[in-house]
Image 1 (tube, rainbow, N blue to C red):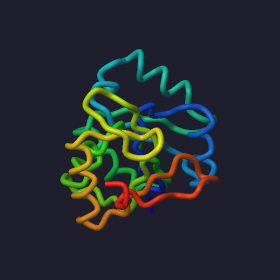
Image 2 (cartoon, one colour):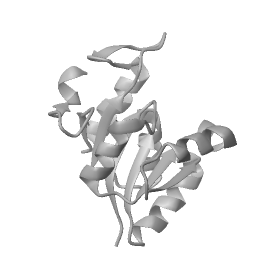
Image 3 (cartoon, rainbow, N blue to C red):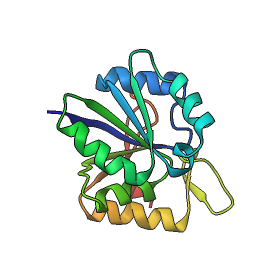
Length: 158
């Protein structure tokens, strides 16, 4: 039986040592990037696949394609990391029947519609509402940049 070993928001998706550290900590064997834009950009999909840690299967799917894929992997022998750029994607996965018990917020950079939330993490008003809704639904939402650092409960920063 497969399992989701990590669900993470990071607008950089896969990047260097951070992802390698999470793969090692979770003993993941697959990474699923859920992002419509990246899934429809063959070049970016290939770049992300090449930047993954050795021995890890990388899949880049649209939101719609991800729901069926995750359900298939949970019936297989997979240890799956789910990566998304923002909370709206995680919320949509949950609405579509994917059970997410814990969500790690690792990187959400500054943009014109975002305000600082925690150190180098920023969120828009809409993203903050989604985080609150996820927490109200029982999802444990934490800020955890790298495995060696201590995690912080996101609720106290909203």
